[in-house]
Length: 211
Image 1 (tube, rainbow, N blue to C red):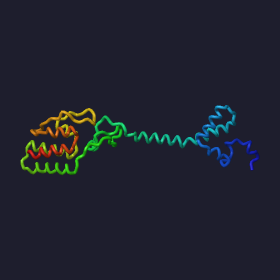
Image 2 (image 1 turned 60 degrees about the vertical axis):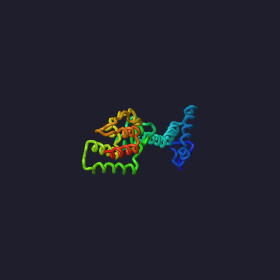
Image 3 (image 1 turned 180 degrees about the vertical axis):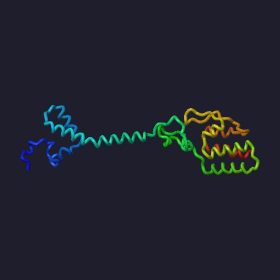
Image 4 (image 1 turned 90 degrees about the horizontal axis):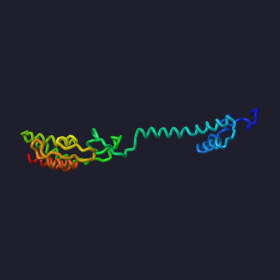
């Protein structure tokens, strides 16, 4: 119904129905066509050139948004592959030896944990000391040490034994004392250096039985 032939009307002014083949071109095809136009120096009508450029940017917008979304997601959750040089804190310190750098919620090296049997043995040893009726500095210290192991307060336990704080989280405490409040804690100190709760339990049960 137009008074002008279809060939005389610029492509960008044609109805959307007539321009669908151009808009359905994939991004690589549109970019290739744009580069061909620029490189060859073809003198296309201004509106046609703007139409090609506009179609290329319109087609590339979803890809750009996807890249931006990926970047934002990557900033929020960096890869948990590099060990952190800092000690775990809070509840994570009770179960984890080394966490990921920048991701304290990711444990790269879990600690050895107390078994249910070891927990029962520690509880019985502590109850026996408390039920003895006579509180002494040695028995009170033994109960305190048992409580630290039960609570998985490993750093506090190492400090109680005077152990040297290692420079890195994965290193073991060293140079622990062998006597605390008159107690022979040499075996307990050795177990702490090995970070082995089962050996700590054996040492504390024997220590409690000797009092």
